[in-house]
Length: 635
Image 1 (cartoon, rainbow, N blue to C red):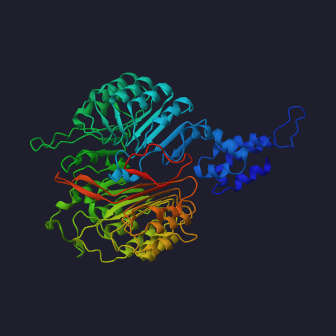
Image 2: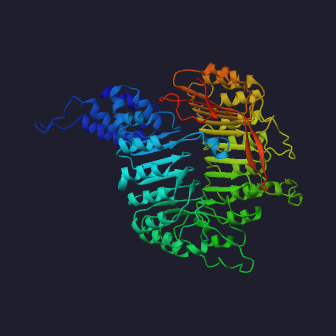
Image 3: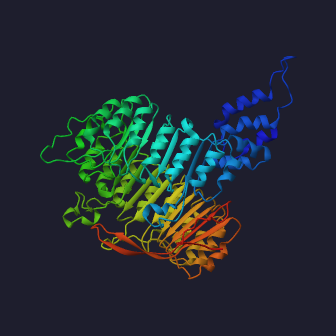
């Protein structure tokens, strides 16, 4: 027992601080007082007893994985005390294998379609069905309380089976970017799961038949904490049901995200939701004839995370009275210009999370850097109206620097790096970038764990400081805590040398997205040399020049790689060169090049060429059996 305990304490990355209460309890057991002679025992308890006490304190999946490899006792302890599992791909294992390995699961998160599906790059019929998983939950995983499906196909029958099997024991159901169900399935959930605490349908596609599910939830649930149907197209819901939910769950309800519901119809809801901390959605409809229509709108007193759809400059003052208490602000779907962002951000000194579009501009980022020193997460999306920018918005600022209107460049990011040193997450679309800017980010943002940069491919904009080889090297060397890294450029943005730098200086990165990087196969050879990317588990590449043989060879050299997605490579007719990476439990799937109808910003539909895909992943379940005709499995 002592030796096993010592082995556990030596397993990285454990720390003594994490185990202080555990060590006290373990020492008490190992020196337990004998009730007969009042002397301390010198013989330790059975190792199983010690490990059963130790393992529940180990919550990090990586630590768990290491601990389970020590011996069978530790493996069994991990199996019996593992309460949460996240599967990055639902085809990585079979449902019955999961339940046998972890019979006492309380929480399960499953991801279906590849992440590229969010950008319409994956065929709709690719797969990702929840049915076998729901059946296994109903049959074997009888302690499940939380279920999270992401990018999966969910049927009404699946929801009914899950709801009837778990009943009031189900506390959390998240249907995140899912499709295939209707409001009938939701009705079954709320009827059978009266004590559900979290119900999420964020950005899901479904068939709306009626609003009975929300009415049923309003009448019978008194413990709801989170309700989220943000970015959905519900049109038959009653605002009165939301008010009823707020009244019945006024003690517990802390987060609500809705679709396009007129905010003035939510006055009763806001009044009743006294403990609400987060609200997103709603709709502000500006009316020139009644410019003060929202002036009397009041929000719950504890609200600190907010995102209002269609928020305009005229409605912005309704946020000013409580702007100082805001910690999260979502302006992705707001109608605010650069100056509006500046005015609002100046009043939010405690902001920790900001999500917006590149309309914020360099000027807005400079204000953000000056006023929001606590900022930890920043997400800047590309504006849908970007192409409508006219030359009148361009000019020069008071210092003579080119002013690109509402576009983000190295100027804004440099200011941000100097001013917001607590940043942990940054995802930005930029129009221009320099090596010096990347070096500055590496020098000042030491807490950065997730960095994602997309260089917009605008033919009229010349990026003068390409390639970014030296900049990306400095960034990666400086940001040692990086775990997730995305670098999506344009042709010529990174040479083979720069790609080699990414491999060499990414010792802790576990997920990586690379777009339009490298020049030849030699770049991928440098990226995957021995010692490069030792912890990389998921690699996604798009628009690259590499051959199938180079891709396969690189995969074989990356020791921790479990998942690969590539679109836009030098594909052969047969894909035979990919067999170089064939090995046990490694599935290789090909999606051939195809033409897909897409609508442009004017609504005109035309066919767009989608290059071929490679999807390869480890799976204990072997090759899947539900492949559509668009997917070819490489035997």
